[in-house]
Image (tube, rainbow, N blue to C red):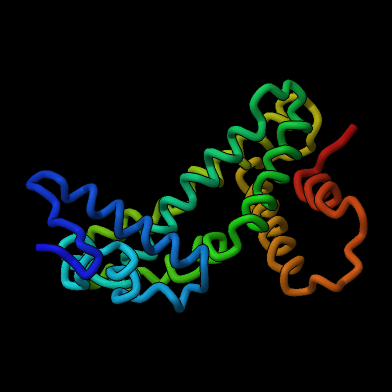
Amino acid sequence: MTSSKGRERNKRGEGAQLREEIVRAATRLLDAGTEQSVTLRAVAREAGITAPSIYSHFADRESILLAVAQDGFAELERLLRDASLGLEDPVERLRAVCAAYLDFAVRLPGRYRILFGAAWDAPKSVERVPELAAEVDVLGMGAFGVLVEAVADCAAAGRSASKDATADAAALWVGLHGFAQLRTAASLFPWPAGMLETIVDRLTLLQD
């Protein structure tokens, strides 16, 4: 079977490849437009397949968006870890990780929004595919873990007064997310210089 783009049917054993193509197609649509542009028909057209072919891998649109979010969080985690490579000072590592987080939000706004948008509406899909519940439960935890490690390292080095790295990393994530969203929503606001440093220093209880 071929689509309007002439795509041939995957051979036996190549189903995983088709699944990846569907996710990549949805990601491209998201990067080029908005969440609303990601429809089953649009994804099928972008992937060069027929719409019914999607159902062998995804129950619905929300399932596709969850897969896109999983890939997005995996990429975010990789970027956060890469940002701290080669830095010995724990405070420098923490700040580099936070700067990388904001850079991801700026460079890929559509993908960033999906990390905290439709992917969390997956209960609609979970009703049809209960196995998705476990995937939603751990969504984003790898990226969050990088923040926890960075805060814990500062505390262990005596550079932070944090007594609970997980709680303080959660507060930091809230601060970073809020700043990322507000910079876009209120771009004309005269944001003070060094705002990122202020957020990081206060929320992670950094000390000299």
